[in-house]
Amino acid sequence: MSKQEILQRIKDMGVLAVLRGPSEELTLKMVDALIKGGVYGIEITYSTPNAAQVVRSLDQEFGDQIVLGMGTVTKPEQVEEALSAGSTFLVSPHTNEILGKEMAISGAPVMMGALTPSEVMSAYELGSDVVKIFPGSLGGPGYMKALKGPFPDIPMMPTGGVSESNLVDWFKAGAFAVGAGSKLCPKEYALSGEFEKITETAIGFMDAVRAAKS
Image (cartoon, rainbow, N blue to C red; front, side, top):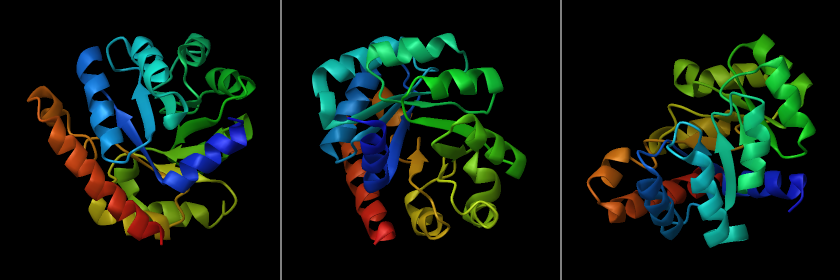
């Protein structure tokens, strides 16, 4: 898929599941449970043990069935590693000039983390296709709506503080998509082996996303 096709697919899905898995094996099972629940946008963070290998395994098993990326990219050398493993998009929790340029020249869709107006503009000027508003819980939908005032043409994706109960508010505020972590895929369910509960949560979350977007 081209960069624009990947971005459009993320926008259409409306949500990326942000996974900080407790182990390689459990993370793979968490993703399988999410897919069964209709979640096809998957972000594996570098804080997950053996993150690159997890992505490599997921790419081999699911291919284009999912949109697979790597998050918590904090070092320039992680860019090539992520893409070689099968990542189709890159997400950083912050905006850094050296890292940002490395991400942008890769040709993959890029989402750099920002919070303040200055950070949002810096991320966009560095080549962030979508600016990740992080942590979204600090300001909430009202804060992002305020950011969209001076920056109406910058796509924004809140991550942190996103739940079924506030999805409508985030999309009303102009979210390109949302990043959801523990509210979508609770780590506790994986640790207790209750993967069917992850699937049930995913089904409910995706129903809420579709309702919010409509």
